[in-house]
Length: 192
Image 1: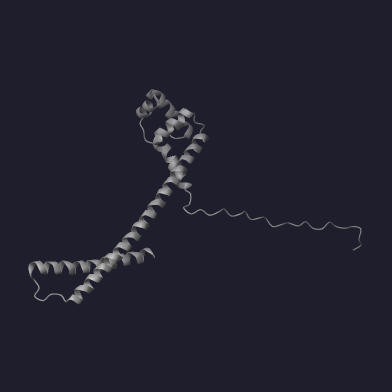
Image 2: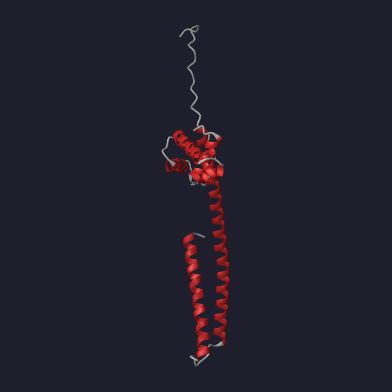
């Protein structure tokens, strides 16, 4: 069922349930306040109760379907996020290798990308802030950027430019060039 049809079906169901709810509330209020002089016939009451029961059943089914769809959508989003996260880390490792970062510089760069301050990085690595500052400057120089925002921007640009498609299709086999036939050699032994 399309989203538009599902929306209209849910609206119709809500209207159906609201109508029967209004009838039940009116019947209850009329009984308590003594507003009605003639009671509803048993046949009409049974029809209302059957309609309300069908509305509740339809609401249960629709609610279950909507919850299942929402859960499936959530799982797909989580899978996409995991894939993007893994893709991001692959990009980070590739860039670090291209820049020939040392293991210490790689660690500092990762902490910097996570948004940690120089003092936080120094505390985590049990080094001085001066050492971390020198390492970040070396990272920025090797990456060709002037600071942390530009460094992060490089990775975001790479991630957005090389975002894998949600539906992967197998690559096409490259087309073979047409076969070129060389002309038959000229036979000089036969008279023309």
